[in-house]
Image (cartoon, rainbow, N blue to C red; front, side):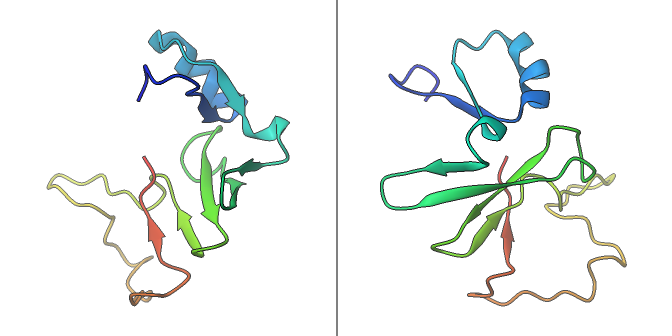
Length: 108
């Protein structure tokens, strides 16, 4: 993917400030310079700025066609044992069902 012709790194400028030090040779496509939207062949995805959720340059991606929010790692767990999501009192009352448009999927 990184060597693919035409590939770009879609991100926020604050994330670019860190990622540029990884030595990737991809051009940056900054969401805030494109009205927080990325036009694709069959849809336009939207970006949601979430600076206080994890990192000052954090974003989530919303696909209005499928109504899926790719939540990045907002719901990620950091526990002594492996866990895909954090399981504490803040998430106990939300029980997503298949097809629920509020269902969030990990995005990175």
